[in-house]
Length: 210
Length: 236
Image (tube, rainbow over all chains, first blue to last red; front, side):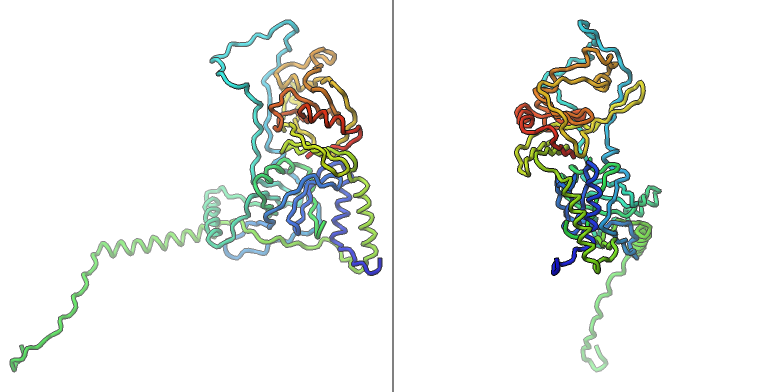
């Protein structure tokens, strides 16, 4: 209508990108830096939401003469190329298989070497608790780093980190990491989205209110 | 005394401080040199290091500037909004949180029930004979309730035997059918995933299943009676 303010082009593109995602019956993540929110959605419906303590770009820089960190083009869809949701799995592999005992037959059991201790019936083997800090590699070449706290930015903290990293590098154990978008959140939230960061998970990074 | 007999008072010079011993001088120099060497080494090592540096997120617009064409933008926004609205879930839906192991039942946006459930372990089982693998995940995404049954019977797949270390029996073997483990009701989704009951009530709230969603008896009955076939299930 005449007089209505024109729509924000970035917001329109965000809508169009999401309209593309909802064509499939998939779960996807929506990251809104302006609201510091990470949402789990499917078909446009919000299934869960996390409030972020902070969002920053994290890069490896020399102590002196740090370069300008790269800007992030938004809106955009990032795809997880490899993530902890795929790697952290327990594998069960029996050594061999034996025939089922026929009805009426009892399987011969070897007597236990030591008698079973008394007590409650054992429960299922617990699934390992996921970590609260981890990285996922994105198709852009960046990492998505979920963490409880962003790296300290004070001079002495950086000096300490530089000495530690330098010593690691001099020992030949240094690691060059790609730039990362760090999402700081509380540990419970970090653990509960750990399994979502697996190969193929789309992450829609929106611009403006959504 | 002076030559004319007066007493002259000659100020006594202040006592000279005792000269430090040679060892203390050497030690002081050594400490200074070591401190300088240490500081220098630290700076050299620090120069090699590449610590993580965080900076505020700066975004750039990845869109062309169409601010001069608001009508086109409005049409595009309307098309996108319509596409989203077309698939947005309505009516009765189930949402399963596989980390917290909670099943939430909604009707027309109103939360009807929150139930403790059990979901998949995420473990991988490998058949030692063929190397075939099964991943015990509760699937993520949108599914649909395609069938409902009372007193469901479980047709045990091969993995149910291999996991116990047994060879799978023939397909028509009686050992394949279990009419106890699934409880009183079953709500079926595609690919063999079922929302069903459990004998192991104490394990509800934990990731212990092979992919299905287990509920306690009361919650299962409520879900069975209130979720029509065709309802959507969202699992994450």
